Image (cartoon, rainbow, N blue to C red; front, top):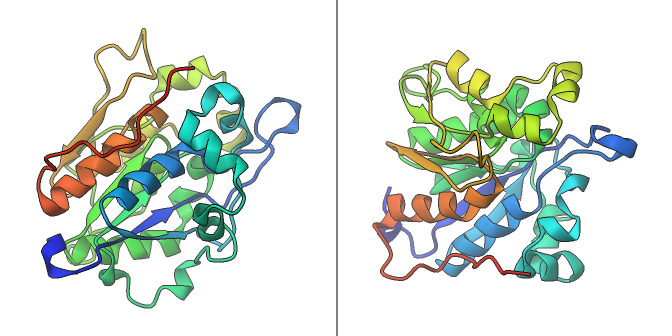
Length: 261
């Protein structure tokens, strides 16, 4: 699928519907904010039309993703600007799978992370069906951090096989789960790690060579029309690689820049 075939390339950002109490003090999980903001800005800068979708048509932020230290300057600005168009996409304009009549009109679907995705994506049949239609029509599947949980049930419509089978992919590392002290809650919720999801679906697990010492270093894997990233720091890179797959490498790096504060 080439962007030249459409004057306005289109992408779906898929977010978790889960809002379960997951973190200490009863804080709930959901979508990780920068993992929505960074791809949104990247696709927007490349002229994409962007829509958001969740399995139930509702979504909320992972509360662990909004402390000051987790937000770069641009994400912080959007978070505090409730009139920003992204809030409408995640609120009143947020789609459910049943409201998307023809998924093949989208050039790509990007599965955003947050621990909520590891809860609902593996059984999100609506999102999986949309992803299957987009992929089978020649589109790109992208996923970051816990977004690859979708691969547990995402099939190629034409072959009936899980699309990740035989493909290289990454996702949030088990070392990262230990660092966030999320292992106990994941077991309590019956959540698989991303390595377990990808390996069980027949994929070939990849992770950065420095994952033991720096699980938050950026890392992206591209295999065919599947793009995956390991953590929030990889979210913009996954979107950029998706654009390059659809339209060739850009002469200008138009990703949002991470600020230093």
